[in-house]
Length: 285
Image (cartoon, rainbow, N blue to C red; front, side, top):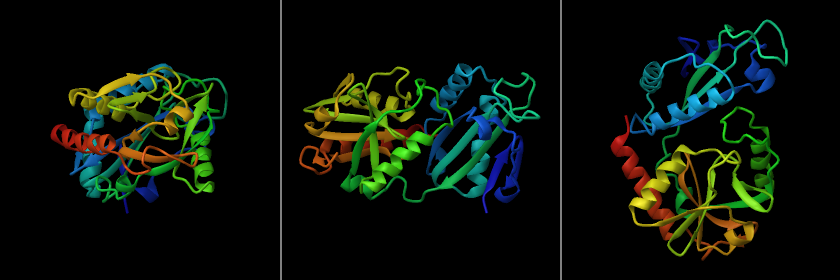
């Protein structure tokens, strides 16, 4: 049984309870982060902490825990649950007022903070990375502030199920003719020695893994172009891949039934995955 963290206490998962009036439950009025654990250490913790604060600020929400205390909670959960490879999920909501109301509750309403671990023993050596994944395209019907990492994830969940129904692994969302991102990841194509991914804006999540991978790509003398691209351009690319905290760099070999490049995992995506894992492990805390 996992030990989880809830509002200052470490508890068995079966004993952790949140009010039915919590605004995260009623209004999706909350934000979250997922931090990777490799070799019992945290990957890119600082980046996740900075993005967490940004998301809270964009929603006019306070932060109930300091960065140092948050790091200590992460480390204690890793220790308590014996996590070598996996994830730590963090969620902060606006709290649980006495009743349901669209208006924000008083500012002194205690917020809810939850953290729990997910054990993923094969995270770094995921065999899927050697064969690649298949994606479909779907209309992007999410709200306009995707740069805020909120817990309102219904449409991405629907997209995952659309992909599953089509016999594929994931979906890339399309708005105004251009790819925004995957359901839970940033999307990329490769043409020659150039990596192309959508530029940052309110339309996509500002991925922590995205930032690291692009930095490593530039250091490896690869060209990076941050711009929009279409599904047709992606299907005609030499390679494609996604990035996220849980997949690192994951090759995409098929889009809407069309093979990308040779239809096999490409050299650039493979090399970027190796670089990301090697470099991230060096600076893990």
